[in-house]
Image 1 (cartoon, rainbow, N blue to C red):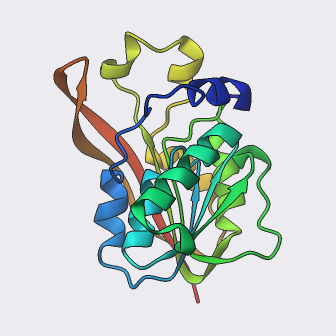
Image 2 (cartoon, rainbow, N blue to C red; image 1 turned 45 degrees about the vertical axis):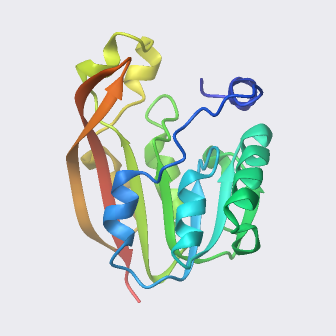
Length: 203
């Protein structure tokens, strides 16, 4: 689950893996912002990237799965926003901004093992432009996930407060919350919480 080959295999079939709809916390946070440049890390099939582009953002979708990025590019073309997006194959665990800067850096449901999300937050923060925002959303530990996940997968979940050590000192925390959300699993609606960290880099 934590390495590119497993995700390349997951994205190798014909069926769409995800709904294609934007993630709820992205919509909640971004709808009030003026469009600019955005980086979505762990973009998968590109649902969030396509939504951002449709809202007027210039977006880079990043993922470590070549098959995922190929799917995302096809979906962006089908949605008519291919001219507003770029793609970047990179592993969030070794991500380096290298001078790139974005008005919004977001990642949803990226869960590296062994508490690695704190380091990922520090890496992603480097890519936020002055005055820009960082949005990190993940699965909070929940009984709704325990029946079908391995112990390693469960340990990779986090609450928002766990991520605060990864923020550089020039960031202002705007939200650090576990936000309730309903989701459907195997035809049954269950209640889960999205661990949500929103921070702004000081100008």
